[in-house]
Image 1 (cartoon, rainbow, N blue to C red):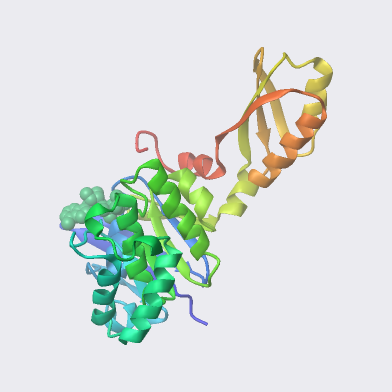
Image 2 (tube, rainbow, N blue to C red; image 1 turned 90 degrees about the vertical axis):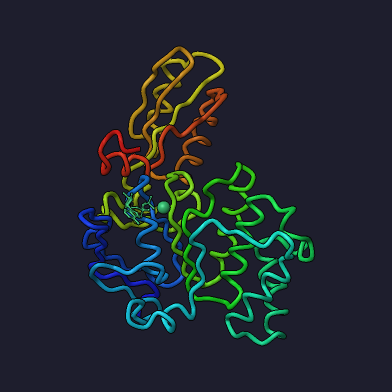
Length: 311
Ligand SMILES: Nc1ncnc2c1ncn2[C@@H]1O[C@H](COP(=O)(O)OP(=O)(O)O)[C@@H](O)[C@H]1O
Ligand SMILES: [Mg+2]
């Protein structure tokens, strides 16, 4: 079976400037991939080429086995995308916006009505189905844009920085919604410049800088190999015996006391392992007041791959 998103040796030049440099990426069905990189890395350029908003200088891209460059219409038939910041006619309601999109997509009105209910439920806008978008927050507009992208039940969803410009609540709502979507068999490619977001939401991460793909790996694998640094604060100074007990816990690679009430631990793995270690520490009797991962695994990988001053 063909992978739903295949990018082969894609390059894009703007005059002399190389925005994408011989980039290849293959995304398997049902996976949620975070496309991560600093500003100007080439994320939007890639996404615009995939969605036929931009022509590549060279290379190929396939969506659900169809060539985007030569057969954009059939390639994009089963794809939903949100690329630019969504804007809606302020006097229209979500029901009206979706009906409009449904008509453009050639859907039957009965199908549009049915899907309108389903997608607005998915993006948690069912309650405001007949409210004018004029009253909507940025986060609600972003979710409505995602609802539009989902209306025709696409196999692939492509989102360019879906939480960018949203307030913290808006970000959480969009992330939660993407996490819910992941329970279906849809394939998701979302760009982001936020490490924690990708680590929290995505199954895999593709890191890009200066138009070049630096790594493509599962978040879990990166976490398992890189480990996590945790800063632990305690209520009382840790005793020598407690220190030894914590250091001996399974999953603790290294332990250092940096201040009277502060320890830094290097742990194996990701959040699951952090939980096990925290439980172990509490079992030793150490009174933990806070337990804060200083860096995620992806952050370590990212910092090791991308030169200083770029982030
Ligand atoms: N239309 C354009 N003309 C010239 N340069 C562009 C154009 N669009 C983007 N670029 C440049 O290409 C690089 C990649 O941009 P972009 O794909 O938007 O990055 P990202 O989305 O990762 O922030 C940037 O350096 C940007 O300035
Ligand atoms: Mg961009």
